[in-house]
Length: 194
Image (cartoon, rainbow, N blue to C red; front, side, top):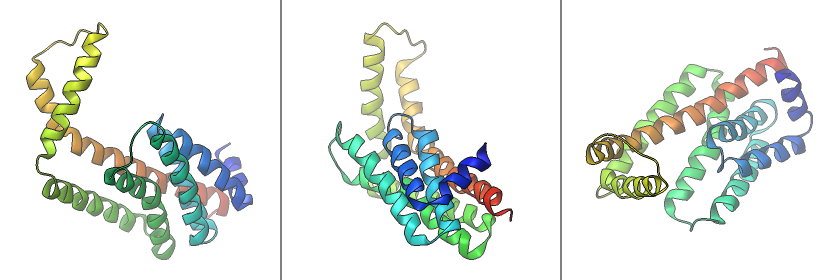
């Protein structure tokens, strides 16, 4: 089944573009599977066809996801950074993988990129932990107002969650971006038999 999907997607670039747009549109509702699929499609196209096609796949997914997100939120710089990282990051890694054929190098680049991104966040924001505290307190209040009972010391839990949120988001981005490369590499192996 997996091989049939990979062969179908790489049969014509328009199929990959449609699948990428659908995955991108669904990614704000269910990020992990659909972000990985959208990135994997772009990387598979980068490995199978041309880098320009892969950029267009990522662009269709990014536009679809951004239009869904912008229908409920206002645009800001963080949204652009997230879209660039999650949709165009796999394409750049696919290009690197195509040039070097080294999945190990791709993994090292992803890890280095996450470290640099976390350093930039902590150096550029005045209070990176405090910004999460306010948002977590808002979510906590909404959850408890609907009758959910959360046990434990509220302030200690919120403080722990606030400290770990940037790391959790970096881990999610790492899983998404490298998962897309890994999934597409498996697809490329199935399609090309390499």
